[in-house]
Length: 430
Image 1 (tube, one colour):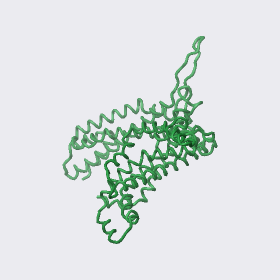
Image 2 (image 1 turned 90 degrees about the vertical axis):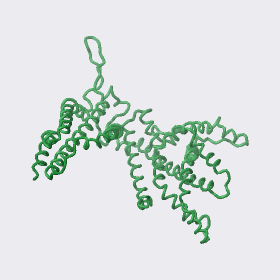
Image 3 (image 1 turned 60 degrees about the horizontal axis):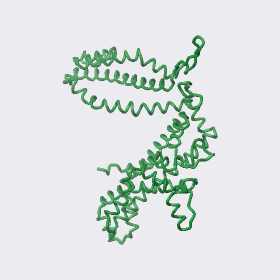
Image 4 (image 1 turned 90 degrees about the horizontal axis):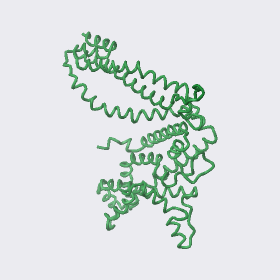
């Protein structure tokens, strides 16, 4: 009774497509044979060589060779290109292996249908969903997975200035040495600890101030007796409507210690100006306040929408019971707002950890300090990572920081979200 499935399965193990031919799916069988032949050709002629290059990262870098009486510059192996081609080759080989396994499963499944006397679908029915998914899958593999894998691999190399920058020099695999250096070498460990601490403080303050500031503004505008509500909404949404980099550059000029309008106003009233962006404390205060100016409108609009969904009869019942305004806010408004916005609140927290624009455009990570290596007092991990790569060519340290940053965000997001009512009572959302 199982002759067709067994025979089709073993034929597909022998060669992709033969099982489909056995099952009388000739078009599908021909397509699978062509894919199999292409895969075998690419693996044997190109991909294995590229994968070997990924393992060795080259034998000799760019060097001079004496030809006659003169020296000529001879190109060598480029370790980073070899790594990229190697990762691409591994992905293609992995895709081929997945295809081969699916080919066997398909042959066995169709064989079982023949054994049971069921109708067998044609190629068009089988291939249509895969044809729709093929482009997104390829896009995710090569534009999302591949860069992540490549960046992660850099953390396990010595790819850094001045001695390991291709094409002059080769890059070598060093295992966890970069992680060890980041955590145990004082010059890196002190910087990482200091920047990480400020990153967490910044993320918490930026999230809390924008979130509760937005709720406060939304509640104030929604109060009965407030006139021109449309005007107030428009007024608060203007900072969000202006391109963020324009707003930040304007604020940077306004906060200039010598020539900024804010300090000019101070001096007009006989007061001394403040070093808004040049003092470590005031620089941190400035970035948080400016971030509130940009972030509060987002929370305000979100909360104003949620406020319209809260049933009025809850407030009417609270009025009958003699509840104060604070009791209604604490027991009705806030639980509803928190339930609806908890996932967004966590997203904002993760986004603030990676908030590049505010810090880079407002302070560029400054003021500088001798305590940190290649980082300033207001640098976040993400802006420090930018400096490490583009300014100082410390790619292996930057890749290590990127991995740790991803782990911090992923772990904190999962832990925080799993403790919210939005996660525990997700069935309430219809």
